[in-house]
Image 1 (cartoon, one colour):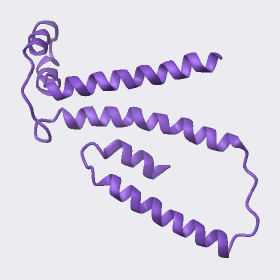
Image 2 (cartoon, helix red, strand yellow; image 1 turned 90 degrees about the vertical axis):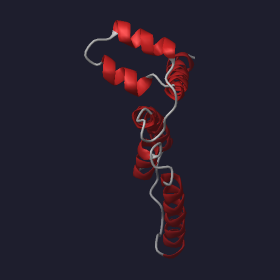
Image 3 (cartoon, one colour; image 1 turned 180 degrees about the horizontal axis):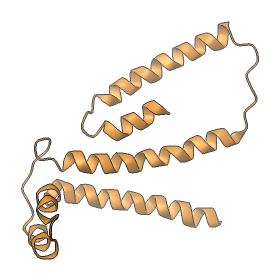
Length: 135
């Protein structure tokens, strides 16, 4: 679980973490297989609640991935593109104090696409948590 969360949080700025996670999962699989075959006697009886809880926690790693990704992709040293004139003029008129920070970090085209994708994914997550749990 730790490997998943660390990979999801920092992989936007360090894509090699996907490979590190793959290697970690592979070695974890080999060690678990060896231990199951050689050392363990009878496994403890777990209920389905453990797997459901784990699956529900992984959803939060997606939110962390979007937040850290927005921070990393908005840095012009990592990824740069031209600013959009509409958003730049909106931020100049409607923000004070943090306006310069927001204008330089979030007014690029790739950040607009990223923010819309993030909002869409959050909408789907909220929709699934609210509507499908009612049924």
